[in-house]
Image (cartoon, rainbow over all chains, first blue to last red; front, side, top):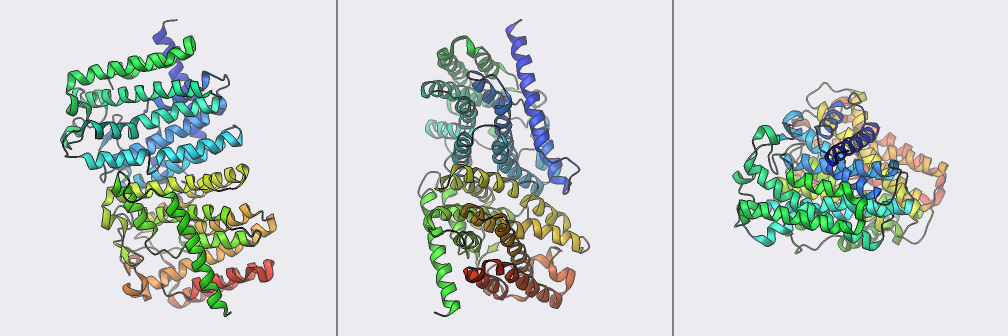
Length: 296
Length: 296
């Protein structure tokens, strides 16, 4: 089978497994009070690529075969990611009306419901972790790590730095801080969860982490480039927002050409980190290509 | 020693223990990015009575002596509570400019920082639970329970129902649903955490739960009464807000006199539930009085 076909089929299969768990976990749309459950489902099933849970599942598969236990963890990662998107899009933060080609959560359900839907997804991520059929000790580690990574010293610190950087002079150090904490951090967490739950040894975790940091940076650069190059139709979110708001982005700090080169360099470094796993890392390698070559 | 003096001293001692853990856990005000850490500390140390963590610690003391392990859990409960206050006060929800006699978080730090500070406190509550020197199995239960209680089927459902009820005809069933899910739920969780971590047997947990449900309802009724009777100075939050916004409250459904009577009845029922524990429950009994007789 052609590698690209293999990759797409595998991604689709794993997306479906994650969707099944999410669907089982979430209250139905018609449960009282309906609006909140509708909003949660709207955002979770708004066509996300499920890239982060896919990373979790691929990392796990380097060490384990049965996908069931890790699918809960992967779905928790997706809930966490969706919470960050909903809160980021709120008028208080980025004020984005579109996300993944659809109206963002608050644009459809109002700000109060979107705020609570985000909160519910964050809490739900922790709950879903505890549902995973994994040993208590591992689950406790995952809970502790997820909390530490998402908190005031992690994701939220990145978000704050992002807000504070708006309108300021572009600065390489700040830009790196923001993306290490915002994008790369969650991507790394996704990979590490798969590795740790699967029983990765320290050197293997380190290789996964290196891969993660590199695809995380590549992903963010491509995101910034697409924000400038893409058309709204293709990308499905408001275009040029970052420029308008005076946000610090890779193109604004390094220019377009250099940014594109950096994305490729990060991709190569990511692939290099995977050499540790040999042929078993085929799909992770293909994912690095997918991230850098995507058009949305 | 006079019982009231004993109670006040005990409350003060336990407040201080909780404050020590919170202070140790939180990033310092001058850590980067500063605004978020300042906002979190501002709201957590804005003069809260620490009633919920106090409940956790008193429930634990029915079964255990050494307070250290439970203080982490109690502090986590306070973080959770403070998260709900910050997000509730946001313009998107209740739009409250004052809280505990001080400007609310968003009034001082802006809406975006307040939103993220709430998120960080919610995440921090989970992290702090994992820090508690308690057996893994118990901690895992607490994490699972906290998540279930705070999520879209718990606290957030109560919050949503509250929002949806605004401007509607007062209705006893909705009012009870809101407060069972908003106020009573977190109070009950605080008690149950103390009991469960302390090793309470099912009948003892049931008694604690009955006490909790009753003081929770009493607390909410008194809150609603104070919203009408109190002066802004005494109470330290915007007065009459509930009336203005057309929110469903106990006085709006039952009238003042009947509400006051109901608060007393709930208090008596709470005290009755404690008879299970005999003299050991002295402080919990006094807390029921404190809740109903408070003037702020």
